[in-house]
Image (cartoon, rainbow, N blue to C red; front, side, top):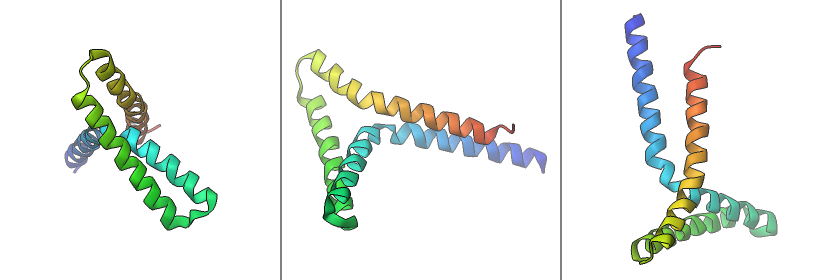
Length: 107
């Protein structure tokens, strides 16, 4: 039974790490969407309006970022777009890894 627990823990940690690294691309659009959604909610659009505006903002950031990276000719523009997306992804990855290791290791 102890071996089964260890194997399940390793599989769970591996799955969570894979999920974090797969979803890290969407950290900047999520940040923009949440920010716009909270702003819209606080200005009086209501919960539905805040969610809709946040989803539109997140989609717009993701699409504009992908288009800018795909069609930009100068290397410095592509590096700048990649840095904008990599910054929040690095912070989210660090926080997720720290949380996973704190969860996986007893005090």
